[in-house]
Image 1 (cartoon, one colour):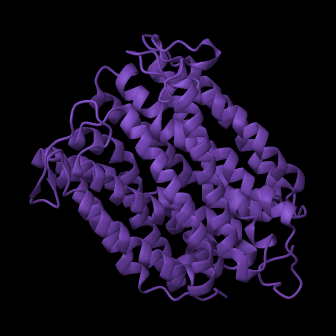
Image 2: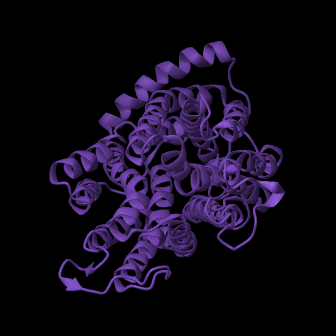
Length: 459
């Protein structure tokens, strides 16, 4: 296997690099359309009896998926390292992912089992695509020299962001329509005769995500080189499980990797909560509906893509650690600014007139919120891209998939904590801003731990 250590001999195959990055392009619509901007709001507003119940149920499904990822990703990663092959594992988990995406279409309003279908399809689909991504990430060291890992990681994230933007515009502009007007965000009637009254446009994002994935994941299977087969599955399971225990022990013994995984665990909790509650917060504090939230999502996707274009070269030039530290500082500053905004207030004390009825982003608080959110979008992508490039610089090459499993574990194992803390503080204070302020604590603690990491290769 060629690794990033082979800087003198490794040649970059551009077709393989592009095909690898297309996996992020293929998978992203599920996260953008289902998890965040279209299906999740539809679930809370139209399937659950109340938005609060919908938010709680969606949170339980998210937690269940996170627990499944936490338990399975490191184990499967260790088995894949033992067997050598990664693409067959990606294929194995792509199949339930596609089935779950298609199943979301059947979660119709008023259906006897719609809530169950939606929650199970979302949870299992999330688990499947997240585990598949672990194996896709582990192929990075065989694609480019070490000096270009940061750019490759950012390129993959950028492809995902652009895919999210394109598919969000397609979904909001041509599929999802307002039940009141029957028109989409672009003012069109939904394509393919989709019925706005039964929210067929919102449900169609599931099958749409499946078709998108099938089309654009194919190049990865065809053109990205895989690791040669090393061992049979039975022996690999025993060896993989044994090596997983060794990896956990090594991670604890290696101060750099342990501190990085602990830091990643904490600030990723904050990031999970930020994205989980961002739409809810903007709806409550600014009174935004689906059109405003969808437009806001498009803006964040654009700035996130631009941020990744700058983040990759900065990662390679200054190091992944410095990029992550910078992004965390910006997240804390902008997060503090966002919780200072409501319909008539900016920065806690500056009063402003509310927006006129029906006007889009016409008030000063809305405009400040958008600017701050756009900056958060610009640093969120580089933050996550640099996390995987930093791990590649810290982890032993021969156990790369295992360590990507541990990275997934650290990013998921406590992912319920920040959302839970936000919910508890909000309930105690009856104040959305106070609840969201908890997220800043997670960013700060993660930043402090990261300052102790030395960006050097593990032995």
